[in-house]
Image 1 (cartoon, rainbow, N blue to C red):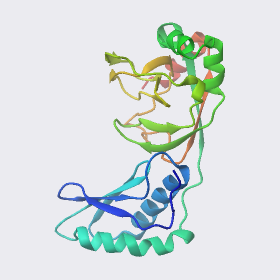
Image 2 (image 1 turned 120 degrees about the horizontal axis):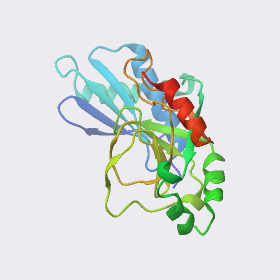
Image 3 (image 1 turned 180 degrees about the vertical axis):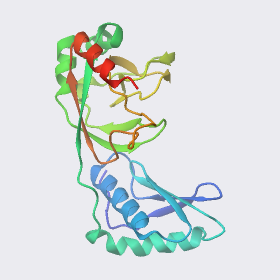
Image 4 (image 1 turned 120 degrees about the vertical axis):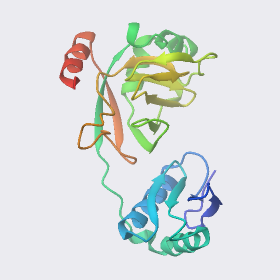
Length: 235
């Protein structure tokens, strides 16, 4: 589906203090760039009553103080800001290297992913580390990033019954997506490996290692390297 990047946004009320501006549908990096440009425009202006602008794949959630502004005012403001998009900047993306120990106890589903796609486990690792992944959004949990760029040869269905607990740092595949669990939590993705990095650490000046728009690359490491990095990452 082709999206007209100059088409006006569609707006929805999202609770009593949030507006949702939709700029397209599906996963489209050009649309995602537009969403992030709008978020930067809004927050750089320090506009009265606006508390946050949170980008996602193709929509922008604007949180506001209803005692200082309202839905109609924000809708008109966002429409007017679209005229400035061509001159709006977004931060230069960073590339974040994430070491991963694949298979065995770290990736109990890697054999399933290989068999499901009629390839070898080594092929799974080569394909997963061979792509650059664009971060479309961060959400669900602190540091959980929604990535684009998974090789179609690695697509795999979710588990029929989610695990009660997935270890922090686990790298998984669900359908056409891959991602990393930043914290221990329940989860239904097919686990293929684990990173020793602490992707979310609230005591750090920058608790999350990346932001929307950055690029992630996965790198295969041995179990010894995993354990060494884990010790360095301990708080």
